[in-house]
Length: 371
Image (cartoon, rainbow, N blue to C red; front, side, top):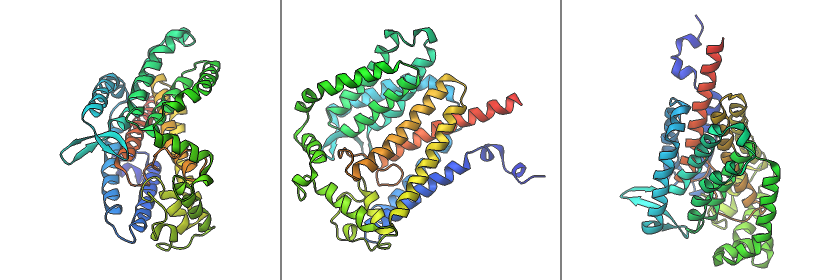
């Protein structure tokens, strides 16, 4: 009798390699948060660890739900979260300069984060129902555009540029994967570039400041450009092998702001070095390799578009944060998912992974039936 036959099928069929990679990222993040607090489990590392395993359990539970169920509930979920976004505009709590939160006693939720995977599910459902002959017609564009643009602008005026940008990018990727012509995206990009000066005039003062500092960080290194300047110093001073655990001067002496959230990667690299940074990037690459394979192996159009869109959502989280802390993108308040402190981003990524594991489970079921 083989060893695998002794393991219950629901457990044996979990993607354990992915789960081990996710746990490695989360626990590496807990170490970085322990260091950011000066060698203390509180206030970040302990909460991060408890939240991480709770959300991971949620993701594993979601993997047992069939993809068709997510498809059936996509539109009701869109309507519910849209209602929550309206409630945020009227009654939301302000945090980090944005009115993005709803508070129910000790529970605090950010509906804009929940909208990201829901928009992808709705778009995937829309294009899965659309006949192939309609994909290059205007009827394939404007409904999808409304699905994306309405929550995008509601989130943008909170104002939350980072979350709204991720929602927009994830939606655009589903439209691209659905087969809309490339000239549509090139034309839209050209129009957005032409409207950029007008859009700039509508930005809030702190958003304009972030954009200008991204272009000219040396203009105010001790003011608006302080975050990027200190981040670059931390990354550069870490060298190949770092200064040692709990020995980072930028982090331990509090020169690096937001080192437990948006700028946790520079704090980690300063202490652990470039090789540790590359190791973390490798872990994310392995996660994205798995999710991309799930999308490629899926024969169902809804599942393929959903898996592709969710994979790109995780990628944009990871890529934009790294570009941001290295000064290659404006600071838009996007944390490093699963690694930095923050329940909303972690919840979104775990929801994405739960749905992806559901699609992967369905793929395996189909393969077993075909044998």
